[in-house]
Length: 386
Ligand code: PMP
Ligand code: GLN
Image (cartoon, rainbow, N blue to C red):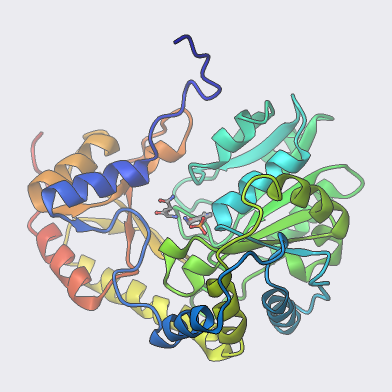
């Protein structure tokens, strides 16, 4: 059958490729980002009781109202934003879906969308499938910051959106107030929208605040802000998240959402509406994950890998140029095959394949997993000739 691909340059996502290889080779999987420790027993029991109470049919397409109410309260206490749960919040099957839906709701052919690279791998295909044009701007290396002058030079009358992700996947950097000031200056008086991917909102380290777009009324008015329960409650397989925006944007968002997913898994939404009352469960996350980052970094000091700074998320990127000059895609394959540890090469997050000899490890793992992985990696020697 003749078929014209709408995404001719898109292959299988690296997360699936590396996880399949890790499973096949029984390697330790520090590649795809997911925890290997159990989620909250209490939250599991709440799903169980919700099902037994009979919450097993469709909820409204916007999501279970008490969950939206609980989110609105949380947003008020964390970011001091007054969000109407009726018109400004929609529950989605994950953050990735929320991002796709937002883009699909507003992008028109030939609109330009600014994307910073390295970029989470769904962004570019999400733009292209909507016949819009990704405008790719590299983050600086090795500190992975936004060069705002470069952004200014790339703005045109076609610029429709800027995609932001803080804490950032894959690099672990976070936006600071200086970034927010620059962003404000750039978008003021324009029709530029913002897609703010904040799925790692609670995973910010070293006492830094999470600068959500929800904190800034002028920026929020033009933003879709996307979140993921999978990241917050250690249940990535639940695929539940939500999007928050101005009612005008949300109304368009829902036009797409209602004929795609319609509504998400009901008992989990009921359970989450109850579990959200426990503020400690999310407020303690940053410290919990920071300890994992620090522990992994300490373990990794016995290896020839050189860490770059991780300020948030559950990732840290490491340079391997002292070990090998192989392309990063080949290096991670060999790491998995010969040393039994899977990681993610950063070049796949650049359209042009920029290879700075950097790979990403996920440290959202049990202590034993991190110890075993570091022990295997410490067998790598500095000057392996290849
Ligand atoms: N954005 C980024 C940057 C992510 O790392 C993830 C995690 N997969 C998501 C969005 C979406 O998460 P999910 O769809 O699993 O809720
Ligand atoms: N966000 C996860 C990561 O970066 C993976 C999500 C996915 O597999 N789509 O590893």
